[in-house]
Amino acid sequence: MKLLPYHTETLVSALSKQEVLGHLIRVTAEVNYLDQRTRGNKKILFNGMVGQKGFRISKVVDKGDTFLPLVLGQVEETPRGSIIFLKYRLFPGAIFFLAFWSFILAAFTVYFFAVIHQYNYGAICLALGLVNYGLAMYFFQRQVRASRKIFHQLINFQLKD
Image (cartoon, rainbow, N blue to C red; front, side):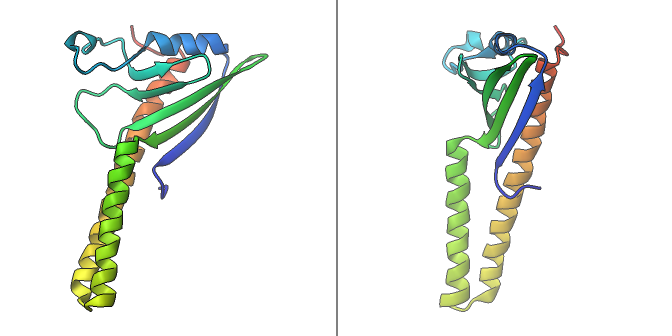
């Protein structure tokens, strides 16, 4: 298990750069939460933006998920297809809250251990901080696996129409 909410991978595809981006454009929509008509389309697998330089997408979900990864990608043309560079990371808001609560619990741990010598409370704060961070990494990695599966199916033409 990784210690940071970050994952990278490089894929080699027989598809050209334009074909990869075309497939992504076909199954990606820009998010507009105020317009109900844009939701519910089963052919849309990703939310985000796809451009000529790269893409920023995330898997479509029915309900909110704090640990959903943001997929940043670049596609490079090669003579026999393309190379796809992917970076999976948490959204900035999720990173902020994970860092905030990790810092607060670490500060309480130091306070209870070093300042007022309440070792039981310090141990509780330390345990809560480790459990909080461990669960965040577990749920992030689980969502990365789900996003990777959908992306790999898309690139390998295994989409169900």
